[in-house]
Every structure is written in structure tokens, then in C-alpha cells.
Length: 177
Image 1 (cartoon, rainbow, N blue to C red):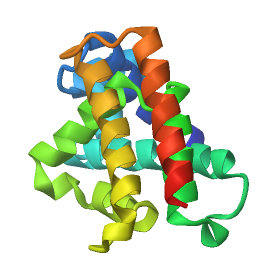
Image 2 (cartoon, rainbow, N blue to C red):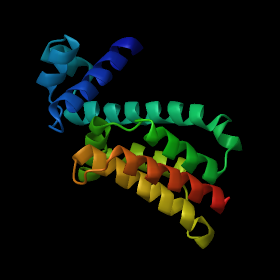
Image 3 (cartoon, helix red, strand yellow):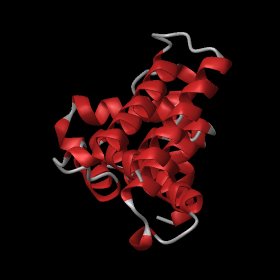
């Protein structure tokens, strides 16, 4: 498959999830969105798990590109504090979408799909068991909580509250370095 076709299919799958507000990705909905037949889509992704696994990897790849851009230095030269700061800034600028949250929860719900997420988390955010990383872990958890709240609408967060949360998170990172 041409990489552009693969990218188009994966982007279409995310648009389907974003538009539908959290419904499962189906062959029919993705095929319709990308302009393929269901059989054409199944040719590229023989099982729904193949499609979901590819969507998860696609999301993680996008996040890594954006996080590296926010870091402003190579991943290998970065510290945990810098990576957490990059994640807060990425999330603050709308980096993590509602559709991506749905994709993430699908991976949690179906452990056979969780490998890419776990690998990404271990690579970027290995907090270890040391207490000196507690402030960074708190910020990371709060940022993920904000993403969950916004993706699910379980808590209404005003723009002012959101900005205050982000500002305090960034301050807390600065005091933990």
C-alpha cells in the first residue's frame, strides 16, 4: 500500500471517531470517509484489530512528532521534566483530541491493542519509583485528567480554569527541576 493511502485511511478513521463522538470504528464508516469500498479497506487491513492497531500507531507517531517539536531538542538529550513540560504544552494547545481519547480507551479496553501505548508511555514518561519524580507525575496525571475531562465532558472546565491549570502545572514542573 502506498504510504499516502495508509495515512489517508488512518486519518479518515480518526475523523470518523471525532465526528461520531466516540462510536466504534467500522469498516463501513472508514471506507465511506476515505472513498474506498469495504473490500478495498479490508484488503489493506484484513481485520478490525489490524486497523485499530494501525490507528493507535498513527496517533502515537503524530504525538511523538509534535512532542519532539515542542521539546526543541532531541529526545535523547531531553530530561523527564522537559518531556512532561512538552506534553503539558502539547495538550494545552489542543494536541490530544477527543477521537484520540476514544482510540486510547479502545486500547485499554482490549489489551491486545495496548502494546504501542505502553511502549510510548515507557519511552517518554518513565517515572520510576523514586519520590523525586512525584511532582512531575502529578503534573502528567493532571494533564491526562484534563484531556479525559475535555474528551468526555464529565467536568465542565472553563477557559480560565483550563489556563490556570496549565499555568500551575508548568510552574510545578519548574519547581521540580
